[in-house]
Image (cartoon, rainbow over all chains, first blue to last red; front, top):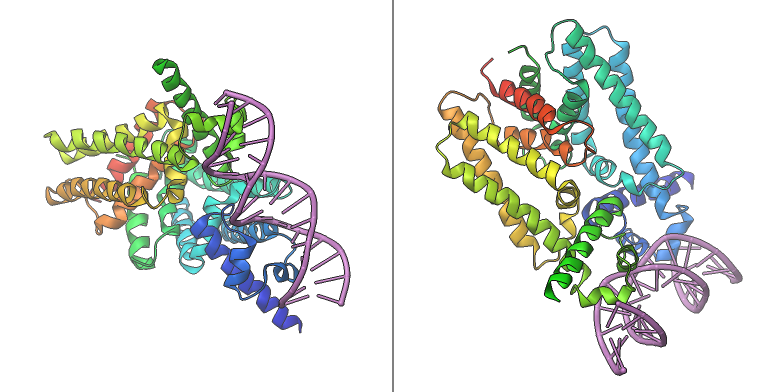
Length: 190
Length: 190
DNA sequence: CCTACCGATCGGTAGG
DNA sequence: CCTACCGATCGGTAGG
């Protein structure tokens, strides 16, 4: 049945994400993965085409979530400050709903095959450009205060990055409140 | 000659750091490394004991730099704000002086062998505790404003993390000024 | 520091 | 989805 097969493929993808996160992509073997989902190593290939395909699927799925969330925010007529708050919400939402995949997306993308790497990097770049546009808009309107948009963008996006690895030690709303307060204050005029 | 041998070992370590950073620890082979430094694969073992040893050396050397820098700051009688500024300086100084090693330290530590992992994690934990002490001291004295020290610590330390990967696109002093301003403002009372 | 080589493991295929 | 198997590559050793 098609439904069963889809389910099995998702099971394999989920298990792959867990292993890629724990041991890294390169150190994860098809054998590891197969035994984890209760198959002989060769049987995996009834469901997937290659080990690389798994990484591509995980990374591009995550990238899509960011891209789609960004699109919605860009299309809104929110103020730059509200847009930034929505972006923080977006990052935390993805982190808390798909922690394993986002950790793989974040740490293992460099092992993407050459066929997928340019697409991936392109999406990242566009996301960064949109993010920077919001920051620059805020600066133009006198809401945000900073010198170099590239430096401040990198600082802010990494300030959120650790949330991709937490094991629900803190609630999403606590983290959101603390990070949002910190970033918004950090961008204020002194 | 001992001096020559030391030199060769350092050459191997440097090349290993570059490869570990580019391809990751697991995907880097002893053959890659040997050819990179102009040796036959087996000859590497005249200079090192194992592939793992290289990762251990790189990671623990980096960890030591952080620990020593922290110790100096903790022993000073600077204000919490000045201590925090010194910590940002420390991170940037290490990042700009040893970019390759710190990237490996930051991304590949999970591949450390079991013999080194507890030591490494212990040092990280102690560093984190010291960092949090400074934040808490600032809060007690009414200089810093935040709710949860663990959340704000993670946010701040990751805000600096992207500097481990820059290719000198921005000057150390520009980055320092921007990040320091952002973090200090972010911790202010609203 | 090299030649020669080891056993283990890798991603993946053939054929049923 | 399994049994059987492939060539390639791995970290590392023996012996000089």
